[in-house]
Image: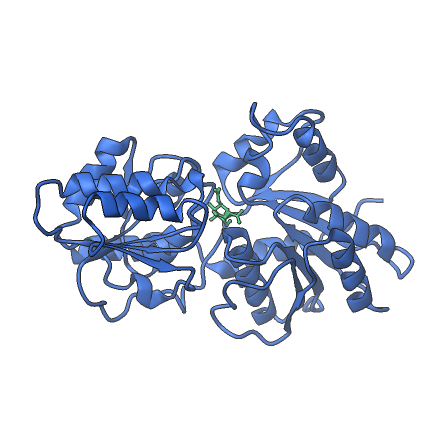
Length: 363
Ligand code: GMT
């Protein structure tokens, strides 16, 4: 017969980061499948779920891990959770383990899962990471039932962690294809960039490439619309000012991205130094917008061998791709973008996680 609905707790950081958007949209998709989900956020959500979802509760608990654990145990009550799913490894993996340990008094131990989204793994690898942080991450991952990654490339980096090899499944991120779809074209030709404007997003260099593409041109034929806030916002703004592009590079601040932001854009563009998935690129593709992105990790997995975008290896190739965007994409290209996005429905992502939530804990 039909399996009973699950009672789930998803834990995420809150704010505007991609891991939080991914957790929120997964929570909403799980509710549409009939489950009840409590989404615990450390800070307020930057953006609500794209569609309201019955059975979804969002609980802001602050940044203190202990407060999150206590709030989840109170909320769990006698019935307890079937599974606890942390989005972003630390400290949320430890929180999930602590909640599961302390739930034992109530009944069966809930399943524990951690999804690695990117910098939660890559930020602790390599010489610039604080000493011992890789070991702490490995220990945290060693204590949960399942570890998943949002992309193949990210998963391939796990072997660099110290200690025993961590078993991992790749479950790509997904998108609500009902909400994110092509529609009325927006006014004026433009490129769209959405990010948290941190150094790894290389936004000043993106503005520089945009300036180089139109050097010597009195008025660029395209605008570059930048959505987001972060530590390199002022630097990016200064580059635009220095290059005389204050009218052509538009900084929107941290407004929530919507389908209307992308619709009709010439391309959605990223120049990240690393990107394990690339949710905003996928939002653009789903709206029928081709991507211009670095030839690495998530963007390469999203575009695959399709013609849905230009994957560029260096700043010169980025500049060329931006210059080519002066002509509008063909209908064939817009269709290729949409059909590539259709490989990543959030329902499939939710189904894969549901299988992991239901697996029995080995005795
Ligand atoms: O990209 C960000 O600024 C936020 C970051 C996060 O961890 O919240 O995003 C990561 O997770 C997203 C959702 O899975 C992915 O789309 C991003 O590619 C990934 N960021 C990086 O790998 C740098």
